[in-house]
Image 1: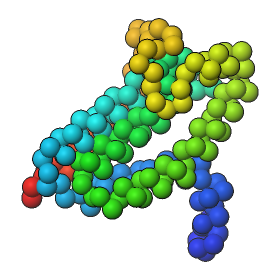
Image 2: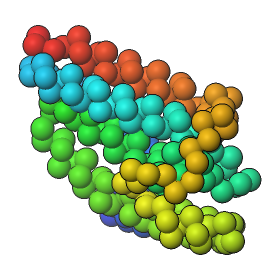
Image 3: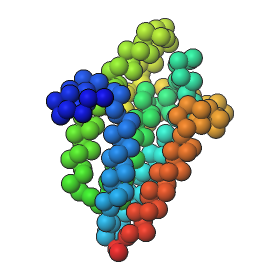
Length: 190
């Protein structure tokens, strides 16, 4: 990898989908490392929001069969990209819990730079791979903000811990995120 600033910048802008996960992880690590929570209610609210995001991602990953079938039940009946919805909740929660306010601008820039192209690319991939199922699902299911009433049955029985672990290693990620919240909580008021 070329580390020249211009090459690095071009790579981040034009091949950003490859760097999205690593940069998201670095953002979370920075929030935890730099956190200095002093407002108890903000930490508590942030930890609660992040926990909802973690649970939403865990729920989504347990319904995902990458490239084998179009996931349309569980959280996919509420939103087309529940993993990204979970990410937004996690980042928002971590920012609120950690109270590193200048990182809000970094997180917003990250979201604007990385998520719209990722959603567009994933929608195009799903449309091509599952054209008959994708069109009606896309028409009735929003990209990021969940519907209050699902477009399809949630079908809670189709969730699989094994699938959640296999799809993205989600339970391991969830445990690490909870650890990050605990570490920030230990700094509360200190």
